[in-house]
Amino acid sequence: MSFFISDAMAQAAPAAAQPGMEGLLFPLGILVFFYFLFIRPQSKRNKEQKEMLKALTKGAEVVTSGGVLGKVAEIDDNFVKLEVSDNSFIQVQRHAVANMMPKGTYKTLNKKSNKS
Image (cartoon, rainbow, N blue to C red; front, side, top):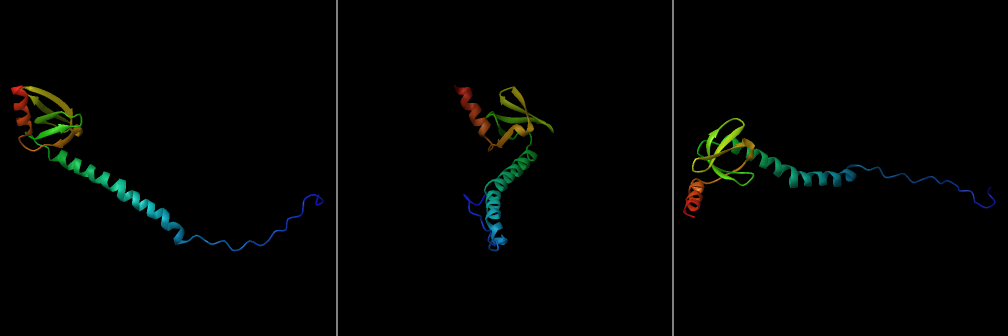
């Protein structure tokens, strides 16, 4: 067979460089970067949301995740009853409350809507 194809002679390969700490620095750097960019801020927001829901009391003015502004009339472990207008109430799940508004926001917007 060696008439058309020359025989390949194997040479001793040079000693391959063993990847040490230098090889792990880049992947570890990427993991640290993603932790500080994505994971840490999200867990911080979740913690603030839980604290806000624990501090929710009757009479607090809130906005739901759907954008409904209301005043807390009753509060339960799972549900919140919101007054959205004079003697108009809706019930939402407690975790649907997105933000607490400053005192007077509900009253000010309610007066504006009554004048119209």
